[in-house]
Length: 340
Ligand SMILES: [Zn+2]
Image 1: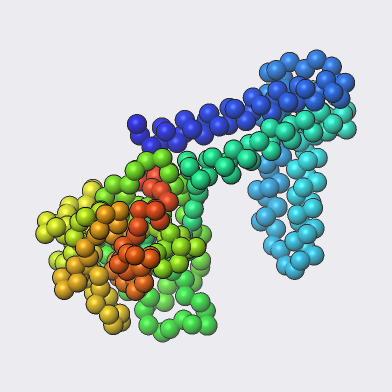
Image 2 (image 1 turned 180 degrees about the vertical axis):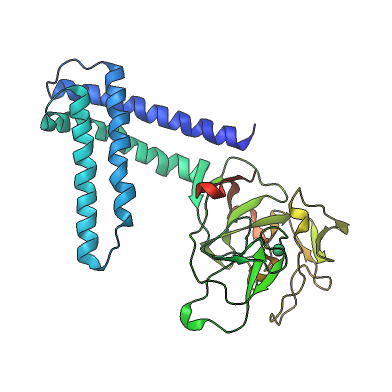
């Protein structure tokens, strides 16, 4: 089954169950608040309308520029007042009752709300889906962290780079990656407007395959999550030369679109030899994986790691460190993409 159908189906089921439970409890609350007999579909309509309307302040208020603790607290309080106020107002209108009576009836929906949070924390996030962003651009242009955008001097397509801090900006051209050619290019003086990072969805139900983009814990510091492309599987020997990945001596053909990526076995300014270079092929043991970034000239991936997980070589991601497979970029909408 396609991951898009699986993901959409799972979310639709979760949302339907949430709405049905909230409507059921709103009916119970209505009896309790002596509003009278509220039909199930009227309760569903009240729940849906209240959710949509009360969602607006949570989207708009964070756009207010915040400075200092005082203003943050004011914005937070305003957000809560608006959220609850709008919820109760909408429920009152739909159930044709008073504001405070609607608020009273609404308190019953806190029971399914708490159980939903529990469902997400205990089941959905650890075992099904989790949303991520990445702070770097080692997977650019496939997945972007916060980034600068410029025009590739060779072909005129967009090119991306991780923003340099203002005080550390060097006069040298910035190393970027071209979205069309999937190769690095140098851009002199890109405009330093920072663009936001992609938000992407990680699926924990499917098994990773070669060329999937995966999220995993960094072997040298398992508190940090990394996002890279999986190229080497357990038991394989990985070598990189002639711009390609070779597994057990066989050149690998990446899937459509990725064949333009030029994988590098040396990086300018990096003194050590790289894992996976011809002189240091990476031999993977059972349950070990080798990962590479798409922005090969600027990716901190298996090739460069100096310290491995306990009992594993530096370049290997142990199976127990895998979090899941990136299936969709979902935000911003202009970057929507199905990766698997
Ligand atoms: Zn280009």
